Structures are given as structure tokens and as C-alpha cells.
Amino acid sequence: MIEVKNVTKTFEGFHALDDISLTIPNGSVYGLVGPNGAGKTTLIKHLQGIYRQDKGSIEVDGAPIWENPAVKSRLVSIPDDLYYNSQTTIEDMMHFYKGIYPKFSKERFDKLQNVFEIDPHKQVRKLSKGMQKQVWFWITLSCMPEYLILDEPVDGLDPMMRRNVWSLVLNDVSEHGLTVMVSSHNLRELEDVCDNVGIMDHGKMVLERSLEQLQDNIVKLQLVFPDWITEIPNDIEYMHAEKIGRVVTLIIRKNAEEATAMVQKYDPLFVDAIPLTLEEIFIYELGGDKNAVKEFIL
Picture 1: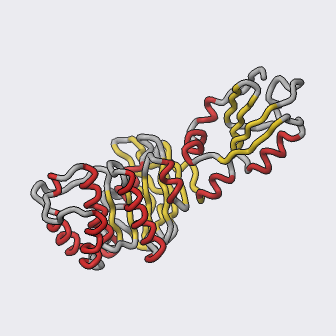
Picture 2: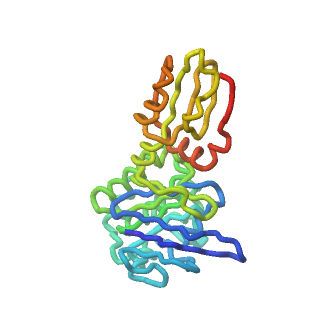
């Protein structure tokens, strides 16, 4: 389990991380989302052991990550910006990682060549961006990590390879108990793979829940009020409202059953509760309420 407890990191007076805490359970896929500048990359660099926090603690199974080779040997990351020596071949990378990670499997490396279909003697710099990203997944999964940190992991991959990569990662989660933390702006994709989600903003954790809990605590209601109701009643609490024709759409921080019951006493001519996507939840949790229509004539 990865535990981040009350971590603060300051750069020249700017709080990149501000008393942030999160927990990533073993054998799960944790999605980290937030707007640009939220502090996601800074947090990832702490999880990689590149940055040292000013306050708080970051531990893997109770042991600190900072300057701890034993912990780092169990954790592999794929950054958004890939780095490699200009003359490095895939085979060179394989030998380099094999010397660092004690569980590196040459057998798996050879088998994964059938998936990625790239000549291991090729220099990495001569490959396209998408093929370079494939190489990193090829090497990383051959390390047989217990913990995998991914920053915009499938950016640049074609749809078929994205599917192959996620299949490999999720198989390791299922078969070997791999724990994954993934930061991505592709919220639709995260929705398909994540067990838990943390939403960051301005260096803070806005909320952290299982995806199921997150989607069960906010709902979109579409309804048509009877003619005698010309405004949204004051006792209906909502985060956002909009109207197209006679159909009113309300974003309500309740589950579907509670939200529907709240409006039923006004005898709506039509009411339907629609689950929100992760992208919609992200938008409304990070300011959708600022755009809410507080008063309008129906």
C-alpha cells in the first residue's frame, strides 16, 4: 500500500503540494486527475523518490520511499517525458533495467516482443513517439514490478496498442497483485480501468473515493416541471442547472434515489436520473457549481 500523509512541498514560496494525503490500496488501480498545475507531476516525482517532501511522509508498505533502494526496486514508473541516451538500443535498456530490478524477467521480455513487434537492436531515438512509449511499457512490465506509476501512459499510442497495453497491465493487477497509480487527462479511459480516484486542485486533494462511491454520490436529473412552477424551488439543492426547452437538467450531490425523491413532491411531468461520467464529475467538482444558474424563469 502506498500512503501519502500530510505532504507539503514548496518551491520559492509556492505550495506545489499543500498538506496532501492519499492512499493507494495494494492490487488496485488508482486514477489521479486534476487540471494543469494541480500538482500531479510534483506528487508523482515524490512517489518516484526524485523529490523529498518538506513535511509529511510517503511510504510503501510502511517504509519510506526517499533514499530507500529496497523500496525503489519494487516500483517502476513511466514518465510523460521519456528520457534515454541518444545511442541506446532497446537491448541496452533491457540490460540496464535488468541490472537495477532484481525481479526483471528476460523470459517475459522475450515473450512481450510478440506483442510490441519491435526489433530490440533498434536505437530508441530512431523510433516514433508511439513506438518509444511501447518500448517503455515493454521494459517496465519485464521488470515485474509490485508498484507501477504512470504519467499520461498511453499518450501517442494507437487505439489497438492502447488496448493491448491496458490488457497487459490489468492482467498483472489480477494475476500478480500489481498496484497502479495512473495520472491522465483521458478521463474516459480512466473510467474503464480505475478502482479508486483522487481529484487534485491547487496542490490539495479535493476528494478521494472509489469510483463506485464517486458516481453514486452525484447524479444528473432531467425533468419537466408542471406549468405552475416557474422557478426551481428553493429547497432543491443543486450544483448546476440548465434548461433546454421545457427540460431542466440539474446536477445534484446525492444518489439517484435521494435526488429523485427530492423533486417528486412537485409532481414533475417527467423525471430521469442519469449517472455522470468521470469527466462530468471532474468538471462539476472543480467549479461546475460556479456556473450554476441560481435563478431563472422556466
